[in-house]
Amino acid sequence: MFDNNEFGYAQIIVHRPLRLMVQFTTKKVASLRFVSNNSALREELYKEFGNEVYIKNATTKLEQWLINYFMQDNDDEETEDGEAEITIASLSKKKQKIAKQLCDTAIWIRDLDLMNHAKTMAENFWR
Image 1 (cartoon, rainbow, N blue to C red):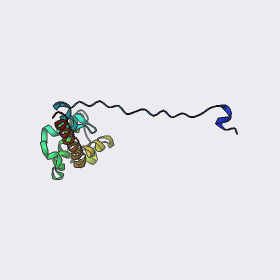
Image 2 (image 1 turned 90 degrees about the horizontal axis):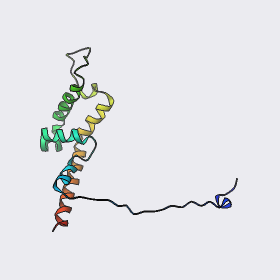
Image 3 (image 1 turned 180 degrees about the vertical axis):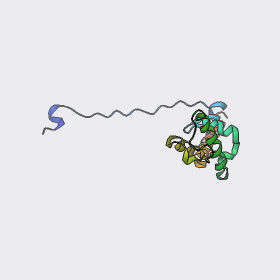
Image 4 (image 1 turned 30 degrees about the vertical axis):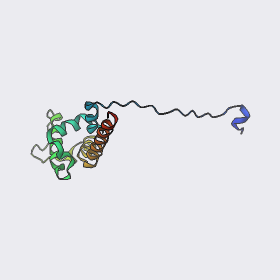
């Protein structure tokens, strides 16, 4: 085997600066509350439950709302046992994963902290 330098080839790594653009408008900062996955569903949940999304005791309410939301998609499909209780576990794997993420208060709190930090930065920036 031959080494790369015998052929005149060399590996070059180009480091470029990370360039980000930030807008501290009220609307943009408020949207950080829903920055995690499924932002449209997060927005609907927040409109429905408000600050309850940050409380672990409210997860059963959130789960029930999500079950109703996901079952609206399945209205055309009839289940074999129409009177069986529907739970998160009876949903498809993809919907279970989405429901788990949406009911996780740690993710909601992380996004709230991000929004609050952005508000603080905006206030300090515009002074």
